[in-house]
Image (tube, rainbow, N blue to C red; front, side, top):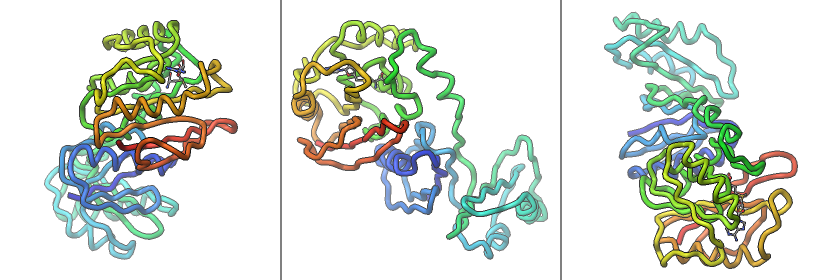
Amino acid sequence: MKFSLLLSGENVDLAILEALSLAKAFGSLKSHSIDGRVLTIDFEGEEFFKRLAFSHEAIELFATCDFSELESVFSEIEIHRSFCVRVSGLSVKTDESLERKLGAILWRKGARVDLRNPEEVVRVYITPKSCYVGFLRFKQEKKQFSMRKPNLRPFFMPIVTLPKLSRAIVNLVSLKKGRVLDPMCGTGSFLIELGLLGFDFCGMDFYRDIVEGCRKNLMFMGFEAKVLQGDAKQMPFKDETFDGVVTDYPYFKATRKAPSDDLYEKSLDEIERVLKKNRRAVIVTNLDIKDFPMHLVAKVNHRVHGSLTRRIYVLKK
Ligand SMILES: C[S@@+](CC[C@H](N)C(=O)[O-])C[C@H]1O[C@@H](n2cnc3c(N)ncnc32)[C@H](O)[C@@H]1O
């Protein structure tokens, strides 16, 4: 079945990687194509759209066509429920008259228009290259992320990763379920997203006060406080314990000084050791890293502000 996703313009590369990682975890991805902010996937499997952070919408694709063919495509749509038509131009100007014109085609075939509470939203994305016509299957609840802003939690650190970005980063482990570790968990942003998604998670941090703060945050969110104090360079876990690892390295300028400068070398070896075979580790840092003890699947940058760009590395054992 084909779906088109309307990606957030905030970071299209991250949005693509997030959606493809989830599609692989939830079923089989036969092919995909990208047209600006529209990602089209040919996918068989369980629906995963509710997990997405960097996509605004998903439609079940009815057809792609040129602008000149839109009316004839609409004449082929059969709708037996109330409906409305919504059109968005992406780098293309459109106006409401197009929605009315396309809606009238369906109305003349006997379908009932309901602009307030339609049973079916016929959605059209128009890009300079193509038109994507389909039925709306997912719309992002944008408020869900602002409702759990980190400053509303009992424990806060300025370097905290915001919920929307944390959700996308966690999705890059490409898992439906399983046991996931954050060995440098800070305030617990990744652990909270893992908990909300139903994962069995485990957190660790070097500093006792941060461990305690993170536990408070997890309990505040209604989760078990599964966080231990430990060193990411020497983890207290057996080999191949975890289905995924996701972590955010200290930003040396912003957080306290790291315990030593062999942190990367040793902790990356440890992450590789505790990860199961063929599984992913997602590493976030402000540094450019060239050598990893695992296969590099993808790298995406996420600019936070002028002096901080997070580099997100997806690694596979
Ligand atoms: C950038 S912060 C993580 C922020 C986290 N993503 C959040 O949103 O709160 C990095 C964390 O790594 C921890 N850390 C630094 N060195 C460590 C080590 N050797 N072992 C475990 N944790 C360490 C720091 O205490 C800090 O909490």
